[in-house]
Image 1 (tube, rainbow, N blue to C red):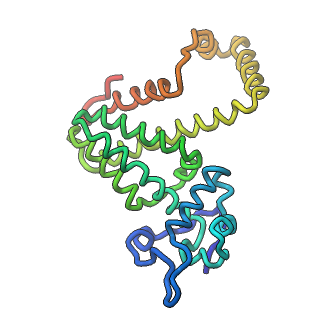
Image 2 (cartoon, rainbow, N blue to C red):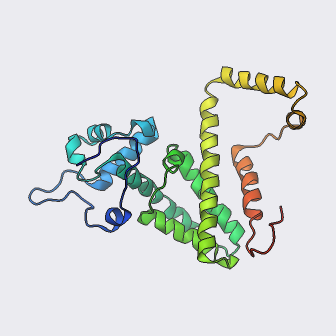
Length: 250
């Protein structure tokens, strides 16, 4: 039975989803009016314009001109639809990786991977939230993972360590992009931003937070969002220890 639009994550079987035969509407007779790809694309477009909360089976059905019940043969619940959406937009990464072949300098290549991820998340601002719960790897996401693991080959790390590095990098990018998206939304509310500045100034002046006071008194570093991301990324990637015998040099 379809599980509808419940916000509680459901148990999606990745083998059935990605390797099973149910890629289009099953059944005999008249050719299906819709495809799983078209329905997924409609859901992505809806999330891009109105946010992830707007993506319900009812809304997606309306977007493609279908009955709600007919969608359940393509995606039995919203969690499955989210899996499809994440992998659908992962296809955008293939042309970028093809245009930027690996250099053999693993730090340079890993930073390029992170920049591709950030650009994707800023195009699809719902993606960091969607990744906050565990997602399976569809064919497009697997292709990008393969690229990232190949970038790490010169490190000599074993397979498990490479996966850990990729997970750490993705978590950093998702967290940073989520922060960027939140800050962008906050810019629409200047009164709230001004109130936060006044609050921190008062806290810094109370004498009980000398470290914070010193930090706030330091000259600001006006940087573009891209430059700031690069500085944070450099600290992460350049500090990675690949021999496992000593702390990384920071």
